[in-house]
Length: 236
Image 1 (tube, rainbow, N blue to C red):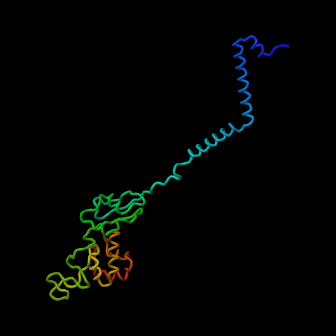
Image 2 (tube, rainbow, N blue to C red):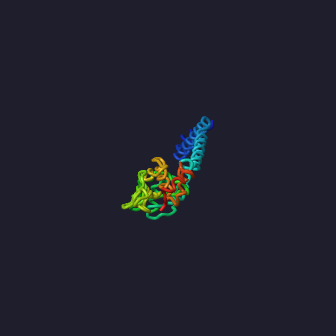
Image 3 (tube, one colour):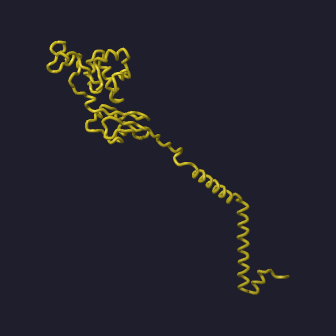
């Protein structure tokens, strides 16, 4: 009966042949084990590939999405005319959302005689707006000669309010709409405290009156009332 390969190797006792036989047996065992593992778990590597593919798609989606959602729109430019008691009056380019204080700062800031407290520095600006900064004299007024105040004619020294010795100085003198105080305006027949405040507010927002007829732009003053007020008001 012929001998098996292992019996022949053991009979011949050849070390090299014995080592070769052991190596062949080891390779065969590893191959069989690997085949069994792959057969029993076919999705082992497929699952990893699917996960990697999914991960790649997620990263791609994240890379294509803009950071922080929709980008904010840039602020719209506006142009504001800054006039009155500022260092450099003129038209300035600002942005929507800025305030009156920003426009005054753009014009170099207020002058020494500016009455900045008479305007709302926190008011929002609009395109095409004219922002007027009055002087303290325009807001408070000074009693120049010939002011009709407190409902009584102002009589200069040596004059008269009654057609007597006062001559041409008799009678009321017209009030300057651009410098009169609230009390002086309140003293004019037909103008009470509410209307006086409206006149001051109008010139503060829109600048000095250019003519007496501009009074009709003040709420509460129509054409008829304007004719009644003309003898008592003027624009200097």
